[in-house]
Length: 264
Ligand SMILES: NC(=O)c1ccc[n+]([C@@H]2O[C@H](COP(=O)([O-])OP(=O)(O)OC[C@H]3O[C@@H](n4cnc5c(N)ncnc54)[C@H](OP(=O)(O)O)[C@@H]3O)[C@@H](O)[C@H]2O)c1
Image (cartoon, rainbow, N blue to C red; front, side, top):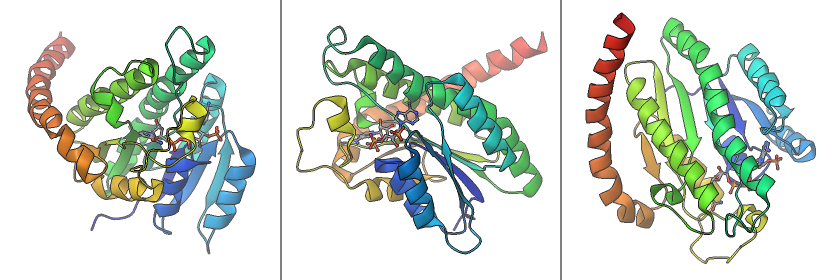
């Protein structure tokens, strides 16, 4: 079994799947838990604090560049070696009918924040992992909605497409470095997100957030893309199987072009 990570940063830890990630990580992993709701984060930190384990709640609004920078600084000080970009939101409804700022916020939190944290934390995470002979980890929480355009939740679905393809490409770029990279694609999951998005049909087959988190942690180091739930996995296999080959193949060509460009 792979060695547990020393320090995990979980975004969107105050609720839902992020909270479940925090609860499912082993006790030997210290936690930096972030979100905007300080009360919920504080309660979770208290619940998960055992023995000498460090569990630090960190209030940050991921829409705000200065909050992201403060979080990046703190994660660097704590030498985080597992980054879980989980925070996310979306709005149900026509693109021109929903709150315009909400659409911008969706892109900022789901995409910009994930990229900001990743590109600013991974270089030091990789360096430390190489020195210690260990492996760092990155989990980006995408969605089964990522594989196609989805009208009436178009912006949210497109952010999840971005996260998926970005993570797959990054995994190819980093395949020889000491890090495991995973794009996690949950289907409908029993959290408060759908209600917050403006439409909660209470589908009977929704997954339990604890199962989603468990599947994600188990898949890290074993897969690059993990679709949660057997039915969704089977349904999306035709999409992912050829895509994996195409991404690898394209990576060989663009990798060669990148090496040539750097030599000039
Ligand atoms: N639930 C589903 O059916 C489902 C399906 C597929 C994928 N997903 C993905 O799974 C991830 C977690 O979703 P969930 O269902 O657990 O959602 P959730 O219960 O609504 O939780 C979302 C989390 O994101 C945080 N967040 C939202 N806006 C933020 C901001 N501006 N700054 C900082 N944190 C912010 C929230 O914390 P605060 O409110 O404290 O800020 C909360 O902890 C998301 O990326 C979502 O797209 C969910």
